[in-house]
Length: 228
Image (cartoon, rainbow, N blue to C red; front, side, top):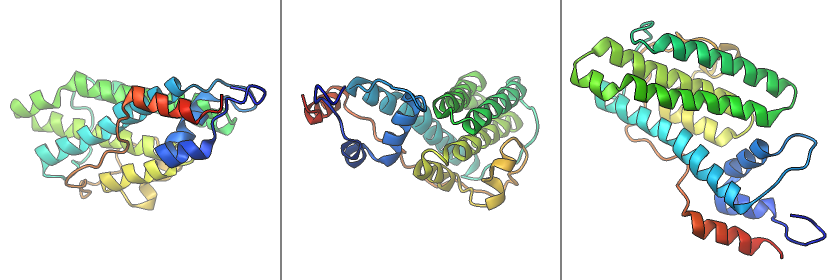
């Protein structure tokens, strides 16, 4: 993409069709501050579908769905390490958060987003490792409560880290989780794992953060908007 060739894409077109947060996410994830970067319709659609829809959006939807199913919508209290995977999740997450903070302070936003997505990936993996559906079937209430709590806590951390980058999405995550206390959404409290009291309730039915795009159609649409 270059001005001499004339094959440019205007950010306002992307914002109008895909939203401000999706556009900001792609640009800040792909572009290193002060350097050139590559834009492609394929890359944009893939980031939208895989990162925003699959990784982040599905994590929130699954978490809300399971809390409604197993705990009538109420987020359980923190009860320490109840599964074999809880301690690992906490320690790795705090490490990723620290690295993300360091990158943010040095304006390496793309690297910070990479660390944030490591938290998201680790949390999705945690669901597969703990198998909450099996815990529910076996009536292991303490372990199941621990899993639900840790899922919410990691989403809280993700929302806090994403707020300077994609604020609307961050606010939506917190709203759907029923977290509105200012003390719970400040960066100063991001490394804590025992702040939720057991009084918070998630929404009855989660709303998708991002709707999955039809890949080929959207790639073609973006190409048509680029001046060639």
